[in-house]
Length: 277
Image (tube, helix red, strand yellow):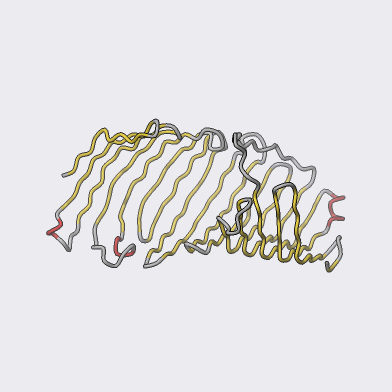
């Protein structure tokens, strides 16, 4: 332990265990001004954690829906910069992580129940993904939110995808729109009702193009377009739509058009209609 509780403080080799939950950190450093809380403000200049491991407790045999609490603090918290370098999540009793985040950076302000996110950046190692988000959320009631996101992903052999998205609504009904570019081009619009309870969705995907050689050098250049629509929930769902594909540089492959109507219910996939021309 180095530093002062009321100022700069660094903790090395931190470990906390509560029942079947465990947290381990290589180091934790913090710079804050707790005395300012007497004036209704709590500025946190820096919060940095290195090599954070979280061991999650076993899932209950009878899972219950996640219920988020109403949060309303009597002071304003300003987090200028928080960073976690190398976050690993483990299942209880297992030695290999099931999820790894290379870097997370957050700048935000919480006043009452209103959360304003000025900067949220996440980097994943495999596949290589970098994402950023800004926006606001209310940490009470149905948690209304309004977020703007953009991201890039790369993966061998030559896949490079970029996306921009907007998420609005609340935990009763979320609405998302996304534009995908790069090795695949598409527009997605989806509504998800009750995402933390019994999610149900209604979505539309418009495929504008796919650069197949980016996914495999042996694949031909093919123009792919189409529209897919889906509605359903975890028990039953359906997908309808059409796809068109052709290889302008390979006329011998011809042109493919497909119209489909498939449904899923009671763990059975039903192909109600499939037309290929």
